[in-house]
Picture 1 (cartoon, rainbow, N blue to C red):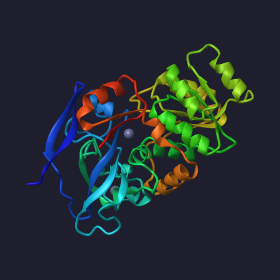
Picture 2: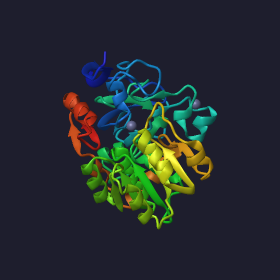
Picture 3: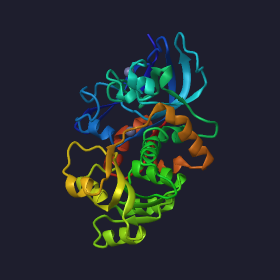
Length: 344
Ligand SMILES: [Zn+2]
Ligand SMILES: [Zn+2]
């Protein structure tokens, strides 16, 4: 019998359970990671409310947490690329490894995938076991907190920016300034874009300006459209990312993008209403969903973070121990935090 560890479960109805469970053992090709940092994400709130946005498992079936980083504590048989003591972040999609999507590096598109924290035990615990191929080597000089934020928050927005071909010639709009939108500001500025951000919460707009956004607008303000026109020389935005999942924001983004522009939906939304003729067809806009990143992108993501001296720890406004999980999820749910991180 292995020793016990603390682990956080979210069985629904805003219940947060800190359970004591056995430390898992790494099987062949797997590693045991001692977790050092694990972030809370907006998608975790679907479990918090008992309506999991990923996978078909009931809330509370697995240890939560899909954005962990830590140190390899034990390796299973046949592990070759990593060793005890290596510092790693974790890729959230556990794929079969041999299907077309896995071989492309999109483990999260694998037909038989499991998702860390949703359908496989995740990182809101003292330890977790993952396949060796899910380990993301983190560079010297990157903290565990920054590494955890570099995956689903920064990595997701960096990947969306790449798909939008964001460059120094781009005027980019970002709707929704939670940790995703804030990461988007950092990613887009590193790629050289001019960035306008939209959020009704004033503190979040101020924070985005500190992170480097060029213009921050309340989307409900009467002059928002006029300000977008002035910012873009009357042309409209070249590209937009919606991180809010809010129908009004999605529509405002589609309206604000100029002909031949592109829009990425990143914020989770179960349904929406848009106006395809006016917003897409007449303007020949490219609209696509973007979710997480290809595992092959991670070395580039870390290079950009290091080379541009991007301090992701700035996004971690709140840090908690596992014992404080109830407070952590409550404050995150109330949008009182940017990134909330369990630090062990
Ligand atoms: Zn996440
Ligand atoms: Zn696969």
